[in-house]
Length: 68
Image (cartoon, rainbow, N blue to C red; front, top):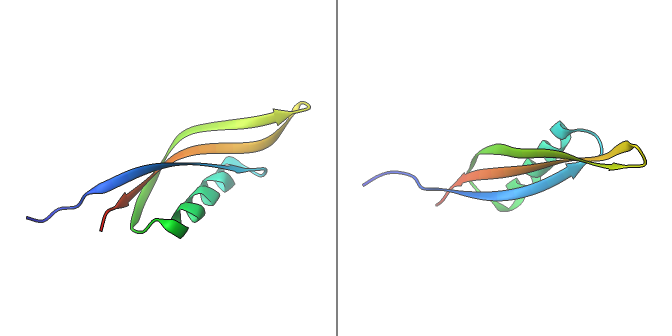
């Protein structure tokens, strides 16, 4: 019998620059410890504000990877 089984784990990452940068940071960090990543789903985007301005862009992402 052949087939694949995937797992999903959640990560949260932040960047002072942009949501795109936060996504890249999330992927790069997950890629250090997880093998066989096949995709990511961005579940939520939020910002941290202070003194009337955006201080950090945050993403909550599900990282999908195939189990060995």
